[in-house]
Length: 184
Image 1 (cartoon, rainbow, N blue to C red):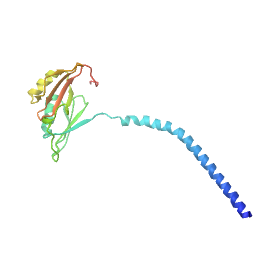
Image 2 (cartoon, helix red, strand yellow; image 1 turned 135 degrees about the vertical axis):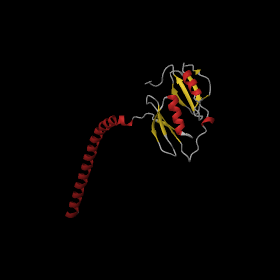
Image 3 (spheres, one colour; image 1 turned 30 degrees about the vertical axis):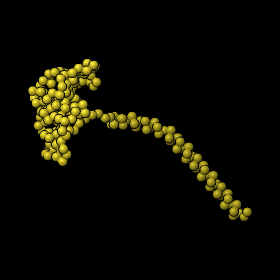
Image 4 (tube, rainbow, N blue to C red; image 1 turned 90 degrees about the horizontal axis):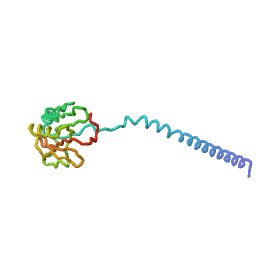
């Protein structure tokens, strides 16, 4: 082997050794950083948790006349119009008195308004808590709602009444013996 060949072999061996050393040091450093990351990530997740909290805000319903429907709910259920949209959709966001939930009533002309009167109330209905189910049922029937059935009491002691608003949308009124959500 010539001097030049031996020198090249030694240089190649040294370069290989340096490369292996650099890779080893890099792996060790990456391993140390990885040990730190879960703590930082956990801290970041804890800080981000409040921003990712979800809660129900509204249910949107395509209705024939959102202005009249919203006014009926305001007049008869004490709801408030929180936002109004312009024609042709005439969207109305209506909220309950305590600000727990909203309904969006709108008319989307290209889409057919569902035939709410033909929908089985057990497939779709809007449920409201009521302190006095019998009284609200009587009041709403006098205001144009129709009864689906009589007031019933479940085995758990909950009182229920199913009605339809003047546009056929099923609405239920419930007084739970043991409330499932906190009442404000």
